[in-house]
Image (tube, rainbow, N blue to C red; front, side, top):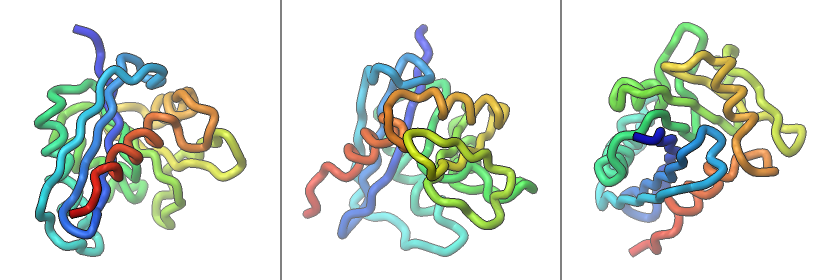
Length: 167
């Protein structure tokens, strides 16, 4: 069976949550082979320090439609500090059991272990990972398709997550 690499994102319209996933057959996401979306009408409220409680149900819904993947790229951090305080990506890694690469757009003060990757400009992305060596994850993000700071797969999955009109 061919490898399946996924990028995921969640958007919060006025009510509920919309999750999206793009799937590629290569780690560079050079060619998207499938796209999935899922809507949850109700989600838990935001809780500082427990963002994953809000995000995971929506991601579970999109994974239920997409099936198994071999690696997931998530918009955000895998772990929040060098001691391994779990972020969304760590919780997702525990849930799906495959490597998870976190790509954050802003620096988080305690994430001193994140590797800064510069693509398409001077502002870096901050890469963390679970189930994959951090250097390998950073090299993968640097090589992902697209000329912009944010890889095309993450731009596409963000657009998909925001595409459903609010009720």
